[in-house]
Length: 308
Image 1 (spheres, rainbow, N blue to C red):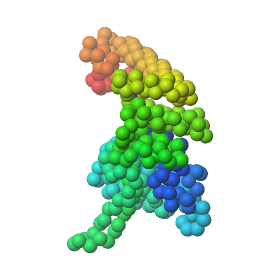
Image 2 (image 1 turned 30 degrees about the horizontal axis):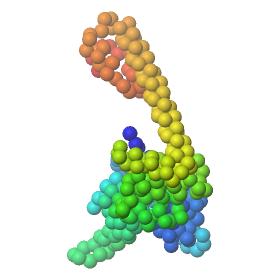
Image 3 (image 1 turned 90 degrees about the vertical axis):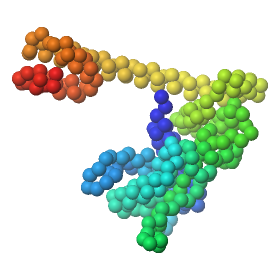
Image 4 (image 1 turned 45 degrees about the horizontal axis):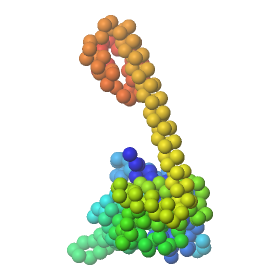
């Protein structure tokens, strides 16, 4: 299963400069957008305590010259546009200001919904029809934007994001190829190329007929570089899947060992265990909980005291 939040967090950190040049070109020209300092993004949603919220990307960026010398850029990725997003961004911007006392540029990227392209949105707070406070932010609605306009841009990030946009008269197969083709000759690191290909492969899914058309396009037009790039991507995905499976297996093995040890300790301490107790222990999946119970076995007066 794709972790969409992590996918876009990694993407926007790696292509931070591209993102700013796409959504806020005039501001980007006045900032050192290719030298961001990414900050700890954890905030509280209410004071003095509240549910923790991890913001997607928060970066401190210096200006090329003049005031302010430093700007905070906050980027949130939302799967679906929501009417309440402006108020949420206002809350986050206020907390960032209170914490850092630096101007905040809020940006929300909608995977679905929202207005096409980049628009400036506002939240107005007031009384009796009069606005006393106006908060503005930039919103980028991917699903309603036209892919062709972004495929023509010079930023590699734009080619990847075009995979989430309207393809116009292009078939799904030609849409995918149009997104991938410019990546083959662009000056990209292996990590950057992988992130972009992963984005396109994730969001442009082909059915059987479209896959046949895509393979025919690759063969007819001699796109060896695209084929090689996709093979490299597929190899890395398979490797990550194997590593994840191995790690999950190791963790499951450690938990199974802890469960067996806990059952032995319980039987040694309390004698033959009721079936209900054995079932409760076998149902435990938290390594921390198993360790906590094992530490209490010697001092616990009964199974009931242990919750077993």
